[in-house]
Length: 491
Image (tube, rainbow, N blue to C red; front, side):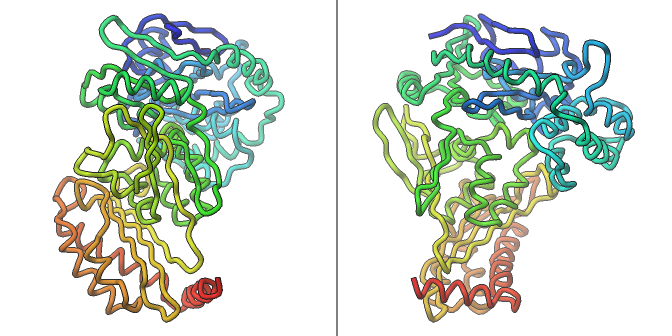
């Protein structure tokens, strides 16, 4: 095992021999390194004032991502290249093209949020050419401004793209940076602590399995987009912590013919791209997963293993009939995703067991699929209700299979079994939907909380089913549905 955290802070090599396992990158930057351009606004990954850019190896490539420093644990930076807003200004005082574009377009007033916007734009500028306005807005959804308004910042994003990347010093340094990061990738398990608590970061799945078996009480951390809040808001002291962030084997996504296989550490950006090949509705739903910083850090395995009843991805995957691959030591078992959730924050996961992969079936010919997320804000908001629906119709147009899954309606993501039974064997029409909607009261007794009342949730759950019917049977879609049925009938 290696007992020091090693990474690059700009051009400077950093090696840390002792630290609090859950100390945030934000606190370390500001208090230890006096990088005060990185701000604390919300301490929960919502406002983007703390945004930094982190580069990590992806094979022989170097991938830079905007992340929230306020909920990222310092030891998870092992093997990474870390850039803050201070690094963008050149040694001769010249502003980086991204910074200059913000100046030219008057994209800052009070300036508190500006460093975070600059770093989000910098990550976009490094990774993409000529982004559309919608893409710019998506990239900035995790950054909040209270005084400037967003139009000047979007204008700056459009202007910065005219700058020449080939002459940029960060782009020119990438080959050398890749070589330096590869020299840090020793394949050893990282083991570090502060004398009281401990942090582990294995580099292989086998090492992870051994650690989780040895420390079954450990908190497993993927992207820390939720666990980070346990520390910054809940003031929880976690010990030990096992981070999965160094295990490249768990990041893979593969097409297995009739289904897609996702490693548990596949981040939400890559997951969205892959799921979009199954349905464009999944693409649109995942566009609203937090901000870009959260999507860069958050993972499919973490989203599921977290067990939140209001997570948006589990209802969609349950409706699709997804399966989990769970591992304990050298043994694996497969479990339907819907059976994984037992009660509020309680899953069918044995001590020493972890989520290794998620298997997501593709839609068969003729199947109907729909997902809706209802929240108070479009961006960066948790669902009040999320509904995902899957139907198969026979040649006569009767429903032969139905999976209706909801989030926000119970203590777990859950199928509406009574409503499903009301659909089976009947034609896909308004009368059938009315019966299924009435049956939802047998499936759910939702809570009233800050996001919605119980009455509202039950009403919305029914209305989402009716939306599904309307979107698949209105004149402009009837031809498409008939074509799908004909395709299914002929194999």
